[in-house]
Image (tube, rainbow, N blue to C red):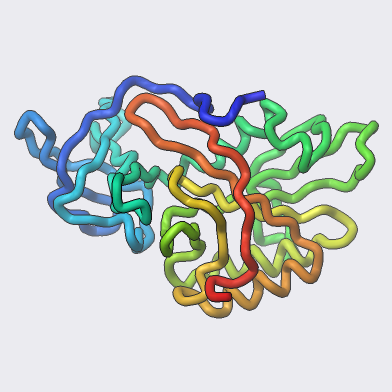
Amino acid sequence: MIEIGKAVIKFPPLVEGTLIKRYKRFLADVELDNGKIVTAHCANTGPMKGVLWQGGRVRLKYSPSPKRKLDWSWEQAKVPSHNELRKCWVGINTSLPNQLIRHLIEENCLEKQFGSISSIKPEVVYGLERKSRIDFLLEPEDGNQDNRKIYVEVKNTTWSERSIALFPDTVTTRGQKHLRELMGVCPDSRAVLIPCISRNDMDTFAPGDSADPLYGELFREALVKGIEVIPCSFGFFNDRITWEGIKPFKSCQKD
């Protein structure tokens, strides 16, 4: 089991620089600290509300390969925190949350919530029309008190309001569909939504009602239908990502 504050993933130190601009969704120009200007791949295609700061500090991964068009990847951004005495590094690579959550499950960090797990199957087809894919389908071990299958949907969460982590940061018809599909597996199976809070300065999670009111309505409907919400928080550093524990959640952005 990974202790709070300990590394979930380690990697070679990232390279820091200053964001010049992000454009065409997938591209970002960055001036490295040595003065060199490079173009990095941006895996986050969303609006990156509250995270995209032109002139802000960023961290890049350098991984040249004949199979890649760009040698650099944008991994982290430094943003203002609700704590005025500090700033916070945020993970912006949307391919990481699933890796992080899988590590937690494999290391039994979520055993209290899930029980003992015998298998983890990624990208399993499910849903009323069999046109959706769940991030993880967990098979519980025979000795579990609850032996239902567990459908797990992971959402990268970087937007915030004060100390509240919020998802989504824009209207998401895909996210709305995922909530409807999760509701469809209840009560025969367990349905779990995991907001992956990719910053370590948040105290709680809530749906981003102001960005997508319909998502907020579906979120509250899903809670009534039995969907479980497990917000998992991580800290982002230049050579590692740390496990920061499970945060509480609210059913509405505004109480």
